[in-house]
Length: 463
Ligand code: UD1
Ligand code: MG
Image (tube, rainbow, N blue to C red; front, side, top):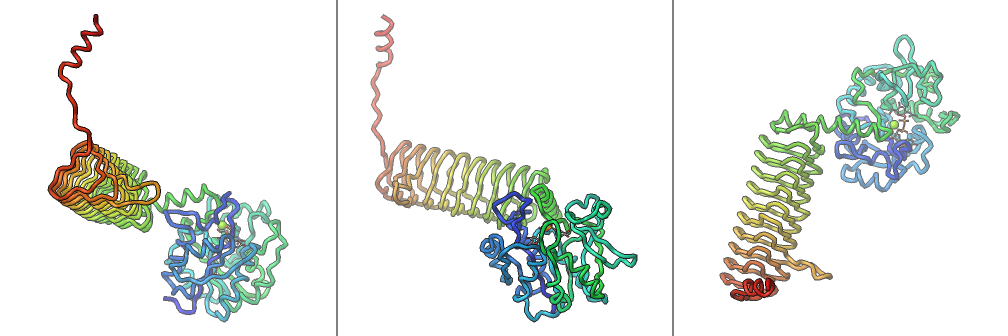
């Protein structure tokens, strides 16, 4: 941990170039809001009480997205530019006179180690601040760095204010700075909004410092990837792809097989055990945890779910907010909507939907069924086409199927209902009353057979 270092993350802007109603820093890359990536990097280096985010546009939503991290907030009511945003945080950071790292919430690839290196560079220098810079083949949109022969910064010129000659400079401002805080605070008020955007640019402090005889150094990054800022959805997609590639690559290095990894989407928070195989176009999302030796079929989507070892999720299956224990099988073409628990060795087959249902160990529902608000005890068999009628138009009701019970195909189970252990429900039944253990329940008309009826009809019509 670096003591006497505070972090200030600017995240108050709308992000006009995203063309979105949603604040830019809440857009997701790698399945995680942009701002969270940045906050996580700072929390590797400092405790949460040394990290402050400046919020403004959709402040409530941004604060909610960060609530679990325990970081502090400062409010920038009107977004008048990055310099103004830092001014708005002055009170929240009152008394901080160590190093202040300022960075932007739209820069999600930044690593803690690069931030650490920036701080060390500033510690070892006699400058008032250090700025991370890098060279880009296409620097369009970024602030350009004007430096002297010693590599010290003379100015940062924003795209909108730059001369054609300055626009040709390829060294850009990453927007990540380490300041000696007590030198920054008094100079902030000297920032003016006399530029084409009419904004208070933080980048103007470079020239202001220079006027006061204070020098600013650069920490030059060779690989620009880490400091790519996101301003448009095109850049968002590019960074998302990069984060996805990193995640699948790491999983593969850790012993997970991924077929056609370029088609697979895995969110940052997902954990997957050794010797599990992920099929093409699968999406593993949210906080999902998958055990060892599982198989996730092609185009399956698993979200916020926990899968034990040796679980099979067939192709084109959706598993949301559910749990499947060791050896469970779901799909192909199954849907576990939410709140389900498929116990060890239980099986859910094609075109079966489960909602808030527990399928006991070894129980089976293999074809075309809907089980909602149900408890299916171990080893019960749910026949093809079985439907729990769990909703009466007003309230939801429970269905319980006892251990080892056999529910025949195309049964309609009208809840609330208990089907006793070891009992049978005849195929095609509509069951409205509970069935005792070991009984046979038939809930349908007895079949009528009229011998010779068809032959006589044929004879009559052919006359
Ligand atoms: C900024 C830098 C530019 C740099 C680039 C790197 C300035 C003036 N320019 O430009 O030199 O090359 O980042 O990515 O700083 N924000 C606020 N309040 C505001 C305005 C912005 O909190 O009033 C926040 C935004 O939410 C965002 C960050 O500051 O997270 C940067 O703002 P943005 O508009 O993206 O600046 P750039 O044009 O990218
Ligand atoms: Mg930006």
